[in-house]
Image (cartoon, rainbow, N blue to C red; front, side, top):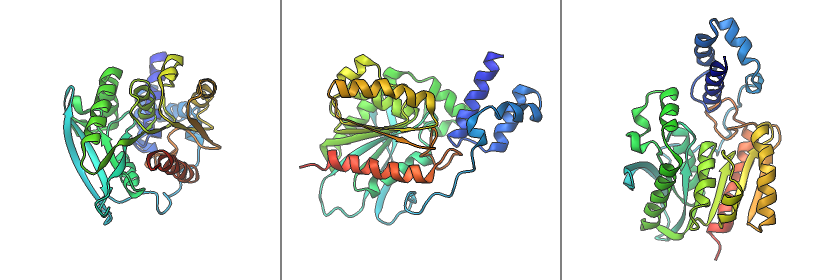
Length: 302
């Protein structure tokens, strides 16, 4: 029974992340409950299933893949475990000026179109955006045809290898001819936010960081090691995770770390992901404005 509950919870999490439709979720859960009726009853116990459908993404948040003002491309570069796959976006007309960069770290299904869109948003904000595919050691996200296999592939990764691939991505980004090598930020979502917390406790070179509902949260020893200015973005109804931030906030402040915290009332986990049911346009737009302001402050400073 407990195993079945865990599988259903994982399917709900994938649904929240935009992996499949509500109808497909019910069908998948029915395989474990025995009937559609039982599946619907089981899913009613999850708060997200009672939420209103997401509103349309507001104008100006998404950036099309063919945006005329940007250069976008798939990339490959060397990593400790072999070739890393990724995606890059940057402003087309810079007048020859070097720009700061922001590394984008995806959620637990690999590098999907949504994260490429976020990378283009980074570029539209005036930075070089570089997204890494943390499934590269298994051939890349494209090798896995659906959300369940992608999630399974991510589950086969480990923290050391993910950290190593992020460090390789940092080295690659620093080497780009159009990047200010010591003005590199990092942003991550959900598991990607957890990877941000982890790499910050092992690497001092990031000039700014923004983990969105990042999990797992850093422990006391990791907080000790953080030198980077961090803005944590979390959600009110993502209660267990957000409550856990209280101890992190207290330590960050008491240890005199440079830290800001934003919690969005009425928003839930994955509220920034406009491909999933938890998308909250108002929270996502404000959080993105706060994010770009944070990067502007720390990456554009004299």
